[in-house]
Amino acid sequence: MATIKFVQFDGTEEAVEAENGTSLMNAAFDNGIAGIDADCGGECSCATCHVLVDEAWLSKLAPITEQEDSMLDLNPDRATNSRLSCQIPVSDEISGIVIQMPEFQY
Image (cartoon, rainbow, N blue to C red; front, side, top):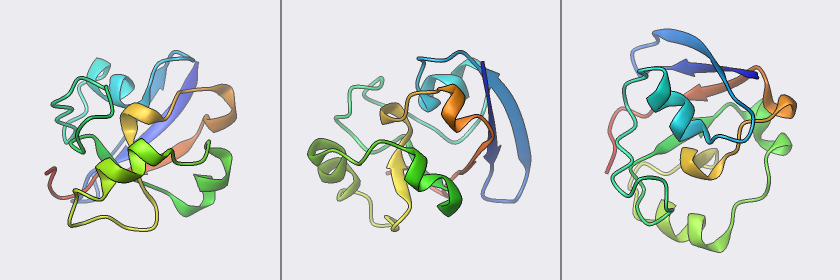
């Protein structure tokens, strides 16, 4: 199990526990976290599970893939710390990660 802190655009914070091996997207869904649409169901074929990863945690994540990069290019609010939550697996190594939710999903 890992702890994930989701921070909504308005600053509201909620920490959840998630099973290792699931994705951050599924961890949000399973715990009723608002703000992730995930229209493709986690197949990395849209950008509606876009999140902003706290800069301190970026180096602990696997590098962004070409497919994820292409999907993120669809988002006009993309930032240097943007990732798709469906592409980040939960693990002990990222327990405590801070995830900022964007204002909108596209």
